[in-house]
Image (tube, rainbow, N blue to C red; front, top):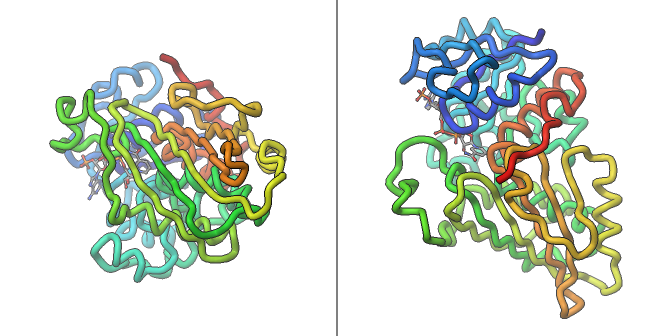
Length: 343
Ligand SMILES: NC(=O)c1ccc[n+]([C@@H]2O[C@H](COP(=O)([O-])OP(=O)(O)OC[C@H]3O[C@@H](n4cnc5c(N)ncnc54)[C@H](OP(=O)(O)O)[C@@H]3O)[C@@H](O)[C@H]2O)c1
């Protein structure tokens, strides 16, 4: 068994890691941290785990974490960059779900996260954790940066078009909606039921922290800078992201469905719908899947790609387990093959 540590086991992505890893055939969670709930069993806080998880929360202790072979950080930004370098030096592989190792340029990190990056050597070696786009690098990595949820949905929607060079690389629009769990489990007024229910709003129009990450990933796919407007919205649902992405074709006559179906033909976790279908967030709840549907708008020039994921699974914990599997030479689908749940 591969011994696993999770830092931040009481958050939404941390508990989702526990749910998924409970079914992993060759990995077991040995160290699970929470500063606030230290001493409590995880299944006393999260009864869904009863019978599947006997882990007890403990305060984060670098020596205990160093006894694991892999440590997941499901913590706010700034934590993994403090703890990961020592773990890497002791031979522990790290999968960070936060933003600490996503942006390659530390100056861009500081611009968006308002503090300096303190683990520059680790940052240089980090793989960016979307397996469908960076599989070989992840498989060879000691440190993987779990992407943001919006960036996962948007990059998987645009990669086939940018890689094939069939769309203009300026003027792209990503109009995205997220459920409330995207903001984490911490108590915040903006996440209260009465603030969110029966309402719908955009936020972060002048600039959201996922914008530079999306720009970086799209530039890798296009091998050129990409101009994109990204507008996130908050939707009164627990889980789910729906990205509607608009781009202009360079030439008419592209078979969009064929392009997407061929690009993702061998991908177990990207599902291209039949021509003309529309994906729904409820169809991916709990599942490690990105469901995509490319359309040509009636003007014959605009591509509209619909992309849905569960922000906590393909947008966070599931994708992190997918990367863990690659980093440890396990079947990529281990612990990730169950269907989503509905309603
Ligand atoms: N929610 C999503 O949909 C989503 C998707 C993709 C990526 N992410 C990223 O994943 C990370 C976790 O997100 P989340 O939504 O799970 O957050 P969350 O619900 O707020 O949970 C944060 C967890 O981190 C622990 N923690 C907080 N500060 C810590 C510190 N200084 N040292 C050690 N542990 C600390 C907390 O437990 P204690 O305070 O008890 O220690 C808690 O267990 C974030 O960086 C987020 O941006 C989230």
